[in-house]
Length: 351
Ligand code: PLP
Ligand code: COI
Image (cartoon, rainbow, N blue to C red; front, side, top):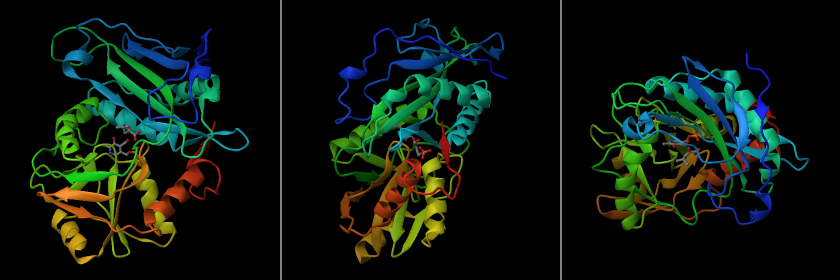
């Protein structure tokens, strides 16, 4: 069991320098962070301390062998200033699933939950109240242990940093369905939130951006015939009135937003089909008019409608409709997250 968490408060808060009406995503950081070291075979007492740089030896294994995993979560404030999280234990469990795959020691759940609570308690004034804004939370673990030997480190750091944030995408989102590069492979680390999964996406995503697309939709590494997920979100496609998303696998991140949307949509009477989805089927549906919507789902992305996609040199636009599943489900899920609606699922977590 974890004891009381030591809190060292900053003497000079930066909060008055922040324009809370014009927040970008993840680019200003709150006053404090949580730090917890793993050494001598166990996690040491976590501490809340002023947000600051950290010093690492140049031989720290994170630099050479990329042992790092992270999570993404959000804290919301309601009209009465109560603070809410969304399914936080699921993030803790997924962090440990990711850690296990990267041979990083798992973190006890109470270190994660109590550490998070202690950090949010000191920085609660940083949680924005404006619609569409929230405090983005980034828990992460990396190898601080030293040495060039290509083997797991013997020391690690678990940190939580937070950033008051607005929306992840600015403007319309167009995506490129990938034909050549792969994000992950069977037996690989695609299901883990491993830092390296993102590094590997940057180059193909840069190429896509040069052509005017904001994200790549990854296809299966074997045939490139099936839609998997996007760089920072899971993907949903609406054909006629059915909402379709691919099944999770060891190549795809088991998104917490994705699984919530599946449950929510079903409860709202929407026909949801979790099945493998061929790119050809989506292209054909775009051509014959039965493709009504595509959207991404994730903590940072929330629900981000996709305006169009590129595939094999052709561009396909999605219809512009007001009455979309994306708008309906986004309102339902954000109302639950921000305590504006009942939460029949028990997802909301009061701090
Ligand atoms: N897929 C990838 C690759 C992601 O980085 C994310 C973001 O966390 C998601 C999907 C969505 O997951 P979640 O809804 O748990 O944030
Ligand atoms: C999140 O949605 O929390 C993520 O981790 C995605 C990240 C690439 C911004």
